[in-house]
Amino acid sequence: MGVVAGTELLTVNGRALADFLDWEFLTAEDELVIEARLPDGQEVVYEVERPEGETLGVELEPPTVRRCANKCEFCFIEGLPQGLRKPLYMRDDDYRLSFAYGNFATLSNVKERDIARILEYRLSPLYVSVHATPHEARKVLLNNPRVPDIMAQLTRLAEGGIQFHGQMVVVPGMNDGDVLEASLRDLWSLGDAVLSVALVPVGVTQFSHLYTGRSMDAVNAGLILDAVERWEERALAERGDRWVFGSDELYLLSERPLPGAEHYGDFVQIENGVGSVAMLRTRVSEGLDELPRLDGKRIGVVTGVSMGALMPELIEKLTERTGASFELLIMENSLFGATTTTAGLLVGADIRRALADRHDLDLALIPAETINDDGLFLDDERFITLRETLPMPVFPSYDFIDVLALEGEPHLSGRAA
Ligand code: SF4
Image 1 (tube, rainbow, N blue to C red):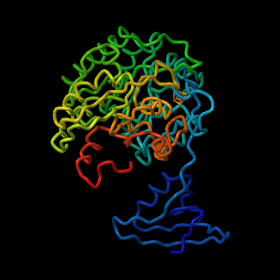
Image 2: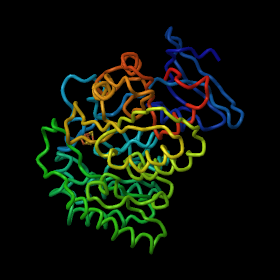
Image 3: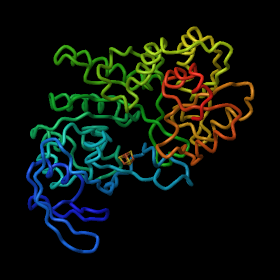
């Protein structure tokens, strides 16, 4: 219809468009009157009758992301060192992205008109950073005296048929103990509206300058898991699912065995590190049959301190199946400091340190999560540049199988990553 790049979409069926949500929902009709302004300033009206199921073929500019109004002591972004690329410091808190992509949002910056949209468009499920339901405790945690009452917000949305996945970052001395118990009780009272709750231990870096809480230790982690067990028992009895989950990190910190894959059902909170280890174990077990013999190959596996402890059991299976010899290279995080032990937060400099002198390795695997969609590590190192300086082929891998299954194919073996 002559819609060209740079066209401004103004209204659909007489309603003004504010953003991608309006466009998505208002164009769900089959008969549309769309007002637009072309890049040359000309205003046009399109009357569109769309066959069912067909898209309009319009690509929108990325939305302007809503900024966060809080200043949480435990904010990971406040714990970033200076000098990284600018987008890493952007603190988004956007219910629209919560619905569209599953990003967690606190709803602190949600206004009355936003509530009306959530209800009208039925933006469900939403992913909500609850952290605590008692209002005073939440104000302190979010470091924001103007934060709205989350229970009032959630109750209103729940009454309108909206469902949620909740998360609580648990800070010892702030929202563990009684606050945690009260929060779980409140969320439970919302019934089916709350689909799941993930409890995640606070993680601070050496740069977390706002943090005044106590550090998370084995005892605290164990107490949080005790609360998880109490509530999951009740949830299983009364609603037939676990409802509340502890993140993998809590099990690792408390040195309790990690549950198996069946514990996590559909892995609804995996983005929160809930069940990631079980998922990895399952992928490796299920993928072993796809692996070729790799006798004599020497393979380096770079990982972080947390995963390092869990790797030997996986490496044993991989060794037995392929005949290759694997070497674990467990790296401390040079950018965030030793307290940051997650493999996915290792940076280019750590990978370089692990592999630069390893002329004895035939192949190296690095955590795929360390690289973003633009091929950059958190320290701005570019993967393809780094890879060229290393003495062996290096592959980002999520689960070993994704890379090793292709190693037996002669035309792919030693392929460029
Ligand atoms: S809500 Fe808190 S943790 Fe999240 S971005 Fe804002 S300040 Fe950081």
